[in-house]
Image 1 (cartoon, rainbow, N blue to C red):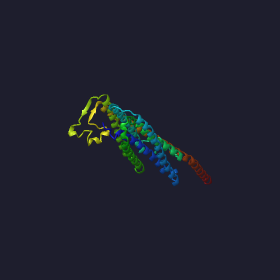
Image 2: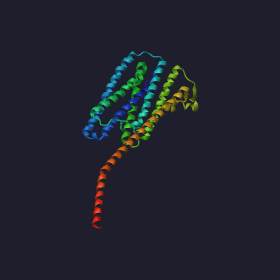
Image 3: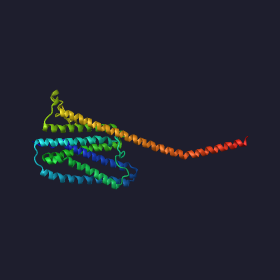
Image 4: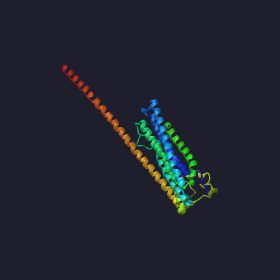
Length: 333
């Protein structure tokens, strides 16, 4: 059996981690470019250089670590039968599904639709060069190292590791492009609501498709549940998810043939994702109401202080006018 050189789950893992990494770098670059304390040309240049250097060195260290783990696992791996391979593929799809779901929840925050407890840019204010180097290096190292953790099942299976290079390149390209879109959108777009909604929904359906596909792999190993519907052959096979054009929407959960497990997993995961988004929206509403209340209290405090400073002067002037009027009355009986 020939081993495919491309794997959608591997591409998803790379795309997700690369996207998060580019968003993190973009956020720090935005803060350095927009914060008043970094507007001095030399200081700003040093800050941007620190971000790039920290990201580069952290990525290199993480890649070396992944190689050190992958080579022994690849050499010591044993031949798995087809069923074990299906289980591993199912696990990788389920893991990728939760990664993409997390990204679906983060995307609106990256674009400013969901509130962040750390501030509008999602980055701590009052940055120094030291804090920039540490925070960027730690976050980028973590993102790259996570790729290695998620790829362990492929390293163990040996043969399927052949799909990593091509899938990884595709994932890096997808993640880099999406990260660039977010960075440009944050710089140029005033209203990013529709972009945030579109990307969140798209990623949610992608995660749902991966989760459903992963459970279907388990189903093929341990026994199929009853089919709910099957219209693959309808309209001359037009609706068949294994053929174009419907194969293009298969990653987002579409299938012309559904078992009971597939139907249950699709709708339950989609409902779970919608519930998480609703909770994020509700939390955002509370955070922004608290911010508005704090701003109102601050404004009321400033206004109260202003009245305290002006009232004695007005009373003094009022008393002076009354004295002057009574004096005038005494002179003119």
